[in-house]
Length: 313
Length: 236
Image 1: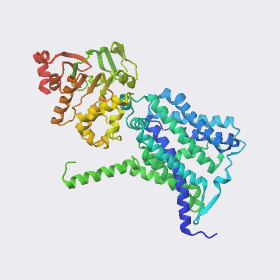
Image 2 (image 1 turned 135 degrees about the horizontal axis):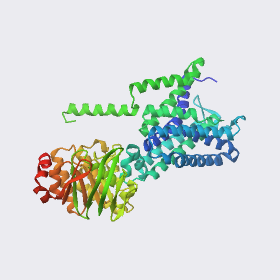
Image 3 (image 1 turned 30 degrees about the vertical axis):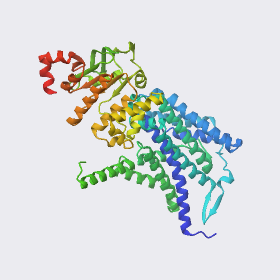
Image 4 (image 1 turned 90 degrees about the vertical axis):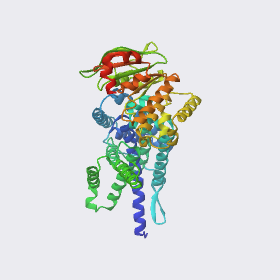
């Protein structure tokens, strides 16, 4: 098969967009919780883990049953996390919440090691009709990739509509900006926080399904790597901003995939090192993240425009 | 309507408010003035449930509201226009107003109130889709008052609404408060601008540091007090 170099590049880009999309969804979830309650939830990885095990144990139910059960388990896990671990700490500072999330993450991983017999390797067998590649004008792609793009777009559009058009969305955005004030205008703290955890759970379950159908290996620490990448991506974009975090997650996921494909074989094991070096550079230059920097640039431009018109700024 | 009895609030070892007793009757416009650190804002934050008192009680319609969540206190009818306005800058002007009606279920009533507020503050209609952060200080103050009014409060608390505003805007804010009072809204206004406050308020409490009452009375009574003149009006 002769494949032109242009189509190889396009293929890399398409693969990378699919990968970046998953991280965008994860970073968006992390940013939502961070904004609403100052929680950087590292136990998010264990939501993915619980979803992965659910997929493994319900694989024989067929795709619909398996996906439905995964969504239910992950959303319930997310709500339970809030109720049992984070609600009692509602008034605690961000560092206490952060340490709690680490503790919860480790505890859940250990629990999985103890109860799931990790000696036996477990995989979610991919459905061949989903992962089999087909060629479109020289570019190889699979149904799974197409589904990832479509699902990401659907979820991002859905999230945007939810946040912009519904009362709950306005309350969530107000709470991410000023939680105390949102309570003073009547937003119920429990309701908005539980909703944030439910949304987080829903996004995590979709990410799990899409991620596991592509990767397959089910381990107790399966969520640890992705959550770290999503966290760093969120920080690059600015965790305090929902679109910023999603964009940061997307870009980092994209870059990681491009590096994986383009670095010489001997350096491929160090992909994350190169990506994180870039992250450090960005954060040294722009500690507030990309979106904050874009806002600053816009403000400067507005001020310059106002000055040139002679209007008071 | 509102009774604050022997209220004490402390931040760690610092007593911000000590045994403060004030009351606001239905339909009344009450001023609470004093210098920085007199405990004025602390009192409002405690009434609205953001701070917990160390002692004393806050009664609304004869029932204690101490320990209730801020949203529950709002549901009972107490709305706050906070210090610094605290507009949601990432929300549009329209969304800032809509979120003010979070506690209400009567859609028609909300629409009606929204129309009244936009008639009162046409600038908010003009900037409906603009980000709240982009408004001027005075416009933000109108937005903050509009947002509080949309909960249809029975008691409106305002924390230094004229702070940092241009003189013309200060006049406008006092005018708005006077209008609201004449229309029947019960108001408790916290201000540093004592002279302007006693002009519009039915009664005014003057606090000294630690939330203790130094003077209180109607504007005529306060005007007769020589000490009050020198201490506050001269500086107002």
